[in-house]
Image (tube, rainbow, N blue to C red; front, top):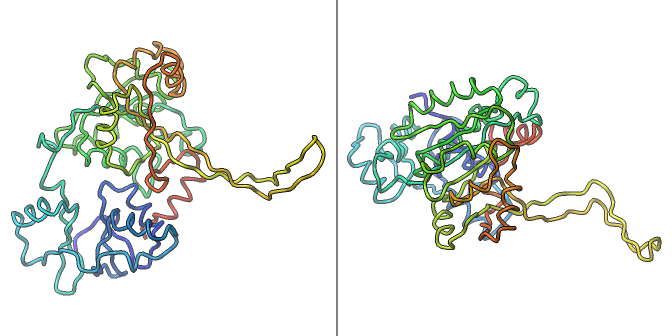
Length: 358
């Protein structure tokens, strides 16, 4: 059996929550469902999961009744790459498993093995900027030595997962800001881009901390696409990004920010009173539902001129400045299941336990 990447596999007794976690950090939207001996039981896609959640939102359910038990597959002695390419193209499949006589997976063919970004119909002429210059103090002790962007999720650095996911969606021109431990970050990324065909990497150098978006002012705006994507290096979005861009353009928006719902439990009992002291009720550890900013934006490049040069400036500062100038600002709501943010060590530990690849 070949050394297959474990990121493609999930056991049949896994929960929907686990499957979503795998898919959120995977460049593909499909997983191979197997038993412990890697025998193929079926495949599961993000579409299968979304349909199931619409019927029952319980994410602790098993995927046993959701995955496709009869996927298209190829036997190892019948591999015809031309035929596989046709199957991928006609059916819009992401992955096709290759099995032996014992029904064990011996190889996997993926869309990107046959269709690359050299195909203009697949690539998007939109620049993507990844903000990776921050220190990431909440992720210490890892960030005492390494840049936050290299924090491993399931053994793979966050920023590599981000690049793989968006490259697979047709984005190939990346700007990445660098400040803290920039040499380490640059060395890793330069090596990564050697494997990304027809892609371009440009570093945005910070000589001092410039906030969550200030470094963008160091880019030559004339070289950018008319609309650009900006994302934090600890945020992974599992959505069709280009469709969101199309909506942004259709609305003639100056800024589109992605938002989602987040439930937060208050750790104390909430007391309600009237007339300052008369007790009404107590609510133990109430849960509040907020609409929050996920750290992913699409902006017209002219908006960059609102960012001051060489000054500390956050994305929230830019949004509020644009609002005061009566720029068109819209939100795009995504499901909380389609968003991963790793901002604290506790979040990283929890997520890695979910997607651990034993």
